[in-house]
Length: 336
Image 1 (cartoon, one colour):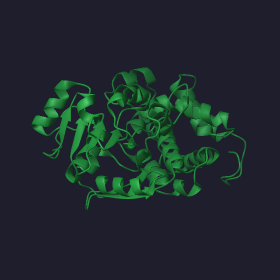
Image 2: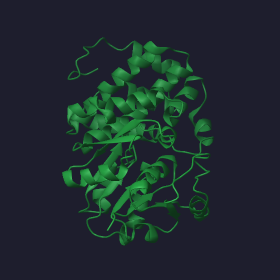
Image 3: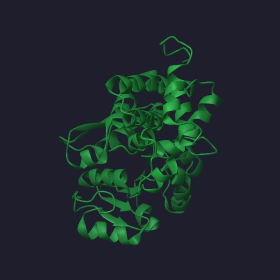
């Protein structure tokens, strides 16, 4: 009997992951709005987030959590981090025992500072938890451009099966990694650094500046991850430097786009008011900084992004703060 997959959240990435899985195994996509679910099923297109991209005819959608997860063998959570726990709590009564949960969210929960795998353990104790992450821009994946991703899970058997479900021959190569913590930290921090890279672009800076931010951002990401118990090698892979490069360079990145506009002098409130999708880095950056301080990890780029996003500093002032800091060693094990 084939494995049945439920993808919760019909945003651009949730829809893309559902489209990949549907080619390999029976898959249903949950959308909060019934109108959107019906249009996806009938027209094989998500006009709200991925207009112009054809979805596989095998993919169906529903607005009922019971219908989506009641018979599911794998649940994929494609909702933003700040609504993650609420939706998990809603679907928990319908989930069968031991069903693996895969997180697509790249953020921390405000208040608790928990990663999404930790939230899953809270709401669905006893369920294996995996993370799907990497340099994966939804529109490029749906267009069939070659890419790779990582499924991080401690259970090797579960990892191999998830690898098969999400693999798309000639389009998406899926690697496994047992380091859930490192892959999650990478996904969270890269969004914050992408805002910084976007700010630099918005201010008219060039490749040297972007390379500096990516490299020093990787140092911040690695320091925090290692402090939380991650494998340092993870940050040299697809979930780490791979996703960081893509997000800091692409005009498709929502976090980068927010940064560009901040660099051009716009206020964060008016930028977010115009957006239909969530830029995780804006909401997660204060939590990342709080988590870093809890573990005595120095993250100067993150600190400046928080100050800019909270209106305490302009982009110009943030650059000045970073460039006039005390001189440091580049060694990743040292502060700076």
